[in-house]
Length: 338
Image (cartoon, rainbow, N blue to C red; front, side, top):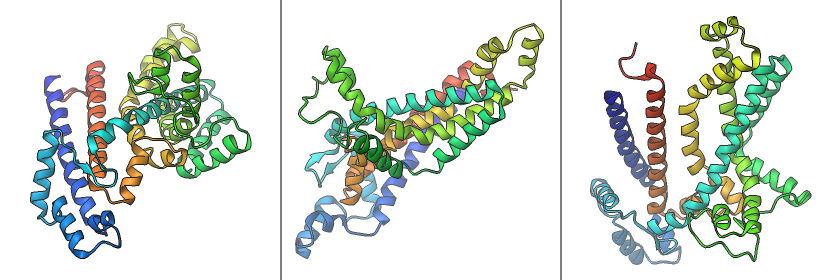
């Protein structure tokens, strides 16, 4: 167990180191001069050169990378030239909105995947299986950006069931006193149920759209695991002991399938927290995704680097926790296990 944990932690540290190099190099080989983008087209060559020197872009890549890593370990993620604020403050301001949206999307994705895959396998009806596979194929091939625009047109503009691109609350409402940063939770903590409902109302549509892609993947994976587990020897033994269909499925098949999709689900959690870039832009959601989109357009290196590194750390940490959890509950996954 300890050797497995040590090995996972070494792999996680190496992955984060590699991600930091990738983010640093990638943003410096893309076309365009960030100093010119910040200074503007009317700026003189001298002022642009001075800005490049101030940003450290006139130094060689090794020096720039060393300064970048050194600042990370001191808690300095850099300065956003496009907003005039530190990246740390920007992340602290935007991250709660993305976490709130991502957590609800995770609940939607996992809940829908488990429900529909279980119904398809438990019923053992060909039409139910074909319906699930068709829905997951359609979801997998639909771009989230296009679905978000379509959903806004239909559910917001046409039927008025959900709010438009208003952000986290309806116009005119005052955000609750910050405790967790999650408006729906903070409103409940302050005893304002109507404000909490308003916050949830703004969450539902963008969270459902973000959950579509993960639903397509998780439902297929869970369905496959359930069908495989249904043919396992221990399931047949349970049936031979007289257990009926529902207890066998509920006690033996479903938990085994859930265990097998734990690593994939954990990676999707990190993806949902950082990968909602275009959907946040469509809904005017003030989270990490919309901030990153603006930073990419304005070539704001420090912001994009910080978000890429944050995404890598989230992937690695969540994956590490999932691996260790799986290793604890399933000894077959440990290093050297037979």
